Amino acid sequence: MNVLVLIGSLRAGSTNRQLADVAIAALPSDVDVIVWDELADLPHYNEDLDGEDVPALAAAFRRRVAEADALILVTPEYNGTLPGALKNAIDWASRPRKSASIAGMPVAVMGASGSPRAAQWGRDDAVRALKVAGASPLETTVGIGSAWSAFEDGTLKDADQREAVADLVAELVGAKRQRDAA
Ligand SMILES: Cc1cc2nc3c(=O)[nH]c(=O)nc-3n(C[C@H](O)[C@H](O)[C@H](O)COP(=O)(O)O)c2cc1C
Image (tube, rainbow, N blue to C red; front, side):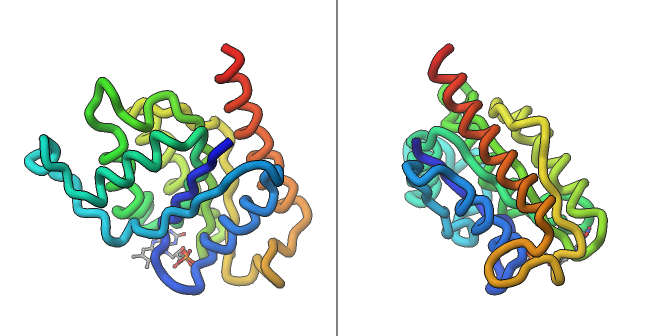
């Protein structure tokens, strides 16, 4: 199984990157994981560029998504929604509409924010955009609030939060197996 991880915060020291690391550590050991670290360089989606000569990085991103069996999308909340870099990636993966690389893709959404609201709006908007894009995001998402003090020694301090991340990741792996069996 191949899992592609997208992290919506581009900054070094990101709490969302730490959350992604916790999720990756919870995956079964036989899962291959790629963290796609080129979101910052992905051109803004533009229908005029989306013809015969798609920008090389956008084409590479679509191939990565198509090769994945599932996605983990880790999003901060910026001004009450998901960051533009992540939304842009969803937009590229949603086209061409009839052969979109993201169609039917199981996605686990999680997010960390500095506020106690735990990126709820960012997570909700990510799920909505993914559904409209044709993906199959899990209904459950995991949010980590007050994120600046939530991590220690490369993991979440709170055992319930660690369990919630592990449960979500297990649900994602299960969703992929169900999809294979269908
Ligand atoms: C442009 C901008 C907008 C933000 N808007 C929100 C917001 O709407 N809700 C929220 O909880 N935090 C907001 N924050 C604070 C982020 O939750 C905080 O910076 C968080 O640490 C970002 O995730 P990161 O640690 O992975 O970079 C915002 C931060 C930035 C830079």
